[in-house]
Image 1 (cartoon, rainbow over the protein chains, first blue to last red):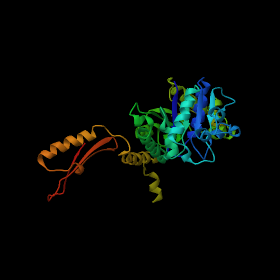
Image 2: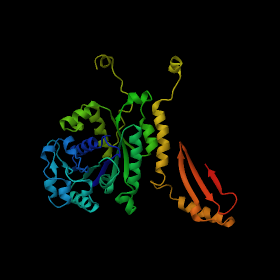
Image 3: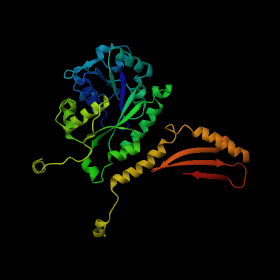
Length: 269
Length: 93
């Protein structure tokens, strides 16, 4: 059984690609054959975040156009077994994606035995974003606790409920879950940032997880290594929890409250 | 005076954000997300009742569901044709 998952948000810069990279790496680490597809045609970045940018030869659009075989375009991750990347084209425009072509590639990936097909959506609600969500079984809606991001996420939830294959067929709707990133419990405590429960009230979807604001995200993209592979940081722990929850295990939510800092860390931290 | 301003309690920015968002999100959801599926039927049945007493046009009846804070507002607008009083607006919470 394969599952198609879209990572989407509407707003740009909230952490879709970071989330795709971490969740795909995490699921693959748990032994599931996983592929992360970059749908951001013209602005590909998933390859960079996953550190395989120099190994891109063929891309998603080449495969759709029949210019390259799927297995030639797939890049196998060197660190994580079971993890593959299908990069976006850097030269074409977003109209290069069409439902037939995308559908065919997803079917072929299923035939190759991929259990999880993670689609990294471009920002916006235009064609590229709609293509990324069209074949999804589940959606991870990434949002920051900030007004424009929450508003855009709500718009995206509207699209997920209306403009996807599942919505058109009238079957079970896409299961959408919220991933709240760049969360700062200290600011929430001071009343300066929307809290998890505020955002949940507004969007009305279940919470998949909270990723705390952290320098580790920038550091890991600098290196091209998903944070989850570096298990010491809060971000890695938070993404690991998300992966477990996504795979159906119960994990208590963490990083929602401000952590108690010891006297030594207060002085020297 | 700045001195007194300092002591006046101001709403925290997060709660302002939440209030602003609840309004805008509710407004933008209308039409984009499938509402409760009984709305079209309700509209038909209300029309049937109204038609007993008045000649009305289906296009002139609108039923919408809006959310204000924690409260759902069902709004029914009926425009009665060619009378002195132009419309009747009923609201129920």
